[in-house]
Image (cartoon, rainbow, N blue to C red; front, side):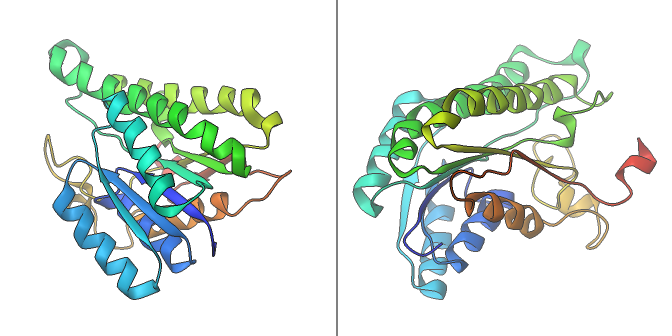
Length: 242
């Protein structure tokens, strides 16, 4: 991915941070977007030193369209033409529908769906110029009904449906669109309302963020006219529990 420029949202931890490291290891310059500026700068400095690539830190909230627009613009100004965007920012709140607060519901809607829309909308003109790739982080929960947190699951169904239909709209412009669907990943996910997946699962029990990052990097490396439409990254025993 030498001479490529990739923007990653939700880049301060988990799948986002692993993706930053992975694409930098492949030679791409990378822009890191999240709200936590201190964590972003620490990671950006580390990957720049380790891999000799250019990095750009863009503290922003994906719920704010103006901040996302400014982040894309500053990325192009700092690193050059944008060839890839990873729509990764996402979160979960609560679970039971009857007990879910308005704040929990709206937070998931705004980050997971509106954030994906704003990121895609602002990145598309730049990706059209480079015949680049947009990679959306979906979920097993966005493909199959499940009892736990139906609202979170619905936001991931939205992301997947949006990405698939976006592919239909912009594929003729040479833009590749891929959805990567993980099952449980050992990250900080879940820590807001309970035990983080990194603490709940032992190493080797479920997927590691680096494994999802490998799938993202593969999708980003595709060149026209080909794209990988969807990649499911499931732990091997997932369907035995389903």
